[in-house]
Image (tube, rainbow, N blue to C red; front, top):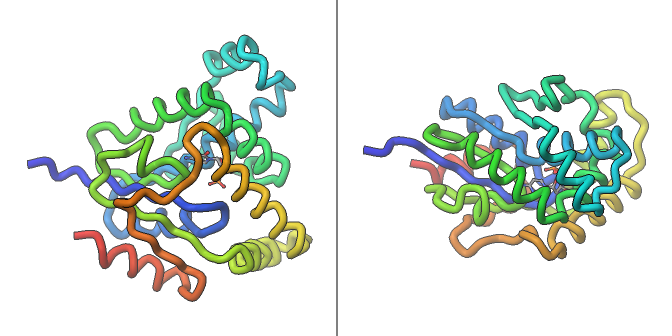
Amino acid sequence: MDDIIRIAVDGPAGAGKSTVAKAIAARLGIDYVDTGAMYRALGLKILCTGIDMHDPEELDKLLKSTEVDYAKGHIFLDGTDVSGLIRLPAISKMASDCSAIAEVRTHLVRVQQAMGHRKSIIMDGRDICFAVLPDAQYKFYLTASSDVRALRRVRELEEKGEPCNFDEIKASIEYRDYQDSHRECSPLRKTEDAVLIDSSDMDLEETVECFLSYIK
Ligand code: DC
């Protein structure tokens, strides 16, 4: 019997996908992969090298010579742990920008599918339900209002003592929402077979319990 569990979670920026997916992975004792962190790592490399990502030759060379790996809650770029760098606003924007390029998506989807091969896994992102793990037994679309998402981010940054501005954060979330769901290649969308969970009025524990109520 195939007792491998695959759980796919999609949704817009700041919906809490990573936090929820990490908690579910811990509860079920399975692996977790944050695919957004992989786009962020690649965005970091594009920024650092200064290549023109719209030049197919330059991009191809970069993709062939770059290693992006996610393991045990850390993101590695060419073997270096870059988890502390990828949440900067400039990287969020670059991750969203580079994720609209078909070659980037083909490359990372292949890496992500290899990670989910023959083991139980929960992955979160924008295209997991329909591109990365289309055969997942459990599919979810997690969302929340942009006000709630921005407020959660503000609280997170305040707890770290980082200065922030609600309106700027809300604008950057809405920029990425628009771009991620309007790009030509694999735009973010809820698939028909995914369960819609709106966490606007739920805390983390309630959201995790809601997910688990669907997972047998
Ligand atoms: O989940 P995140 O905010 O860390 O993702 C950063 C960006 O990467 C997001 O704006 C869109 C892109 N992304 C994607 O296109 N597909 C995924 N599976 C994950 C992220």
